[in-house]
Length: 312
Image (cartoon, rainbow, N blue to C red; front, side, top):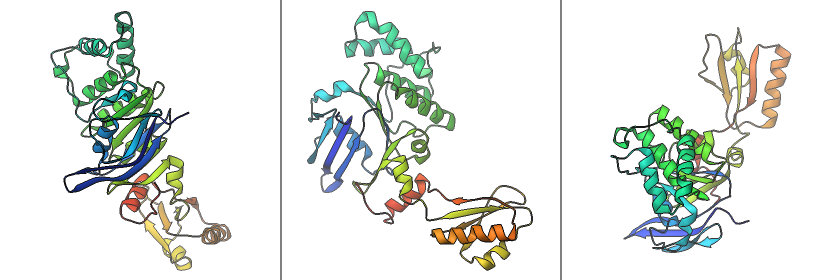
């Protein structure tokens, strides 16, 4: 079975500026894939090239095994697209607008009403009767998802769908994307790392025109896992006494009047065993002792600052 999206050694320059320098990644069918990068990293350029809106200077793109061609690519019949700032005929209601989109997409008249109601229910706009001009940005993004899914695409591409939204708006969009995964493969570009950790099962990090990390969320976290460990202590345990035995401990902030956390960076298995042995011998009141899992933010900063080995 081919991947939903396959990008191989994609290159693109604008004048003398080389934006994409051999971007490679693949999106398995049925996944929610986060395409991560700073503003200006080339995410939108990649998305527009996948849609056949920009001509690449090198490389290849396939959507479900079919080659993408610039200008009039047949692969777009399998793709739904939500730009970062979608535009609508704001004098219309949601049903009027989606009815127009259904006509353009060639959806049979007899199927349109049920399809429109299904999409509006999925994105939480089924009870909305007002005209689009009164919608918040989050509501417009949700309507954009409904429009992008109306023709039942096999791949949904969203460009920065949660940027500039308040926390409630972001929550609503992420819930809509989670609901969409039952019908399609989802690829969304973003610089908001917590959104990726919340709903994605795979991700790639774009930096300086290349993909510097790529894999499942478990694989990405494992890249730096097992190097730091943390101990949380309370009720009379002395940080100074512990540090006198283990000088590499650093004290970090932890909520609670009597509770504190100690972090040992770049620790080894033997270090961890020695600490656990000391805690047991001294019968110390320890709340937890565990290897600290790296966050996606840790991985992103390490990868973009040259601390992580590049793996496309």
